[in-house]
Length: 73
Image (cartoon, rainbow, N blue to C red):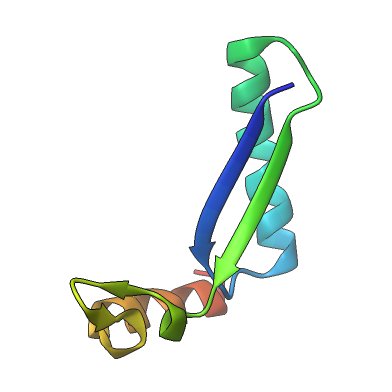
């Protein structure tokens, strides 16, 4: 059974999560032909993640991307 862990920012809507999980599962199943693919999505708030010592919640590029995620763009 393939097992995947995805670490990503919070904010994606449930229907988009479902679509993402289905597409990832299809690709993994195509590669491994094993079935029973397990995906664990770990989500973090931007205030809990830092790159080069700078919180993502303070990075304008990250904030813009998070707005797009929330809007479903």
